[in-house]
Length: 272
Image (cartoon, rainbow, N blue to C red; front, side, top):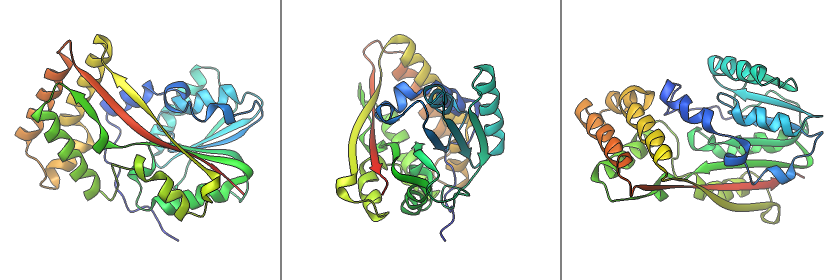
């Protein structure tokens, strides 16, 4: 059975978790919400700091959410955040998406947000997610598509950032343009075309607070996160290159006419 071969590009630096903690079920899993019932059992794969997981548990208040990630440290943070919110119908466990440790036909909903772009074998990951979903349940996946990121005004520094990010992510074994590939991967994993609903949605950053928040966190990531370390270790960029990218993000965020749109592919797959 395939195992994970990719390296997680972002890592868990504070600048990364800052963005992950911003994510909610509303802004990151809206396409899934109509599928949830009060008594749903949910597996949240690659849960990170658990903000989406806790939201799903609040919606499935009579059911249960199992939130898994490959890193125990971030699961500790997720458990603390859920406890602080008073969410009790949630469990946390270390698990590999390529080889989930659960029995067949266990969950009503299997969800993964921004996960498949980072794994070594996304088709095997979807096969595993399909295996642990109950007949009639759903597998829900959402991933961004970096090549389709769009910003204004034009910035050579941000173009350099995008080129560098895609180089590093692919060198790590991932696929940063995952959003456009989700339906294809689902069909290869054994879902029927009639059972796959493929849609898209976006995040947009243009208000002063949003611009400042996003540009600050990416300028920090460019210098201090695992992405920065991997870019230098792999010979993809120098420290000076990263400093220029960080400055480009800050310059973009300072402009009142700045606008950024991040597109996501998303799929709802019916298990049978």
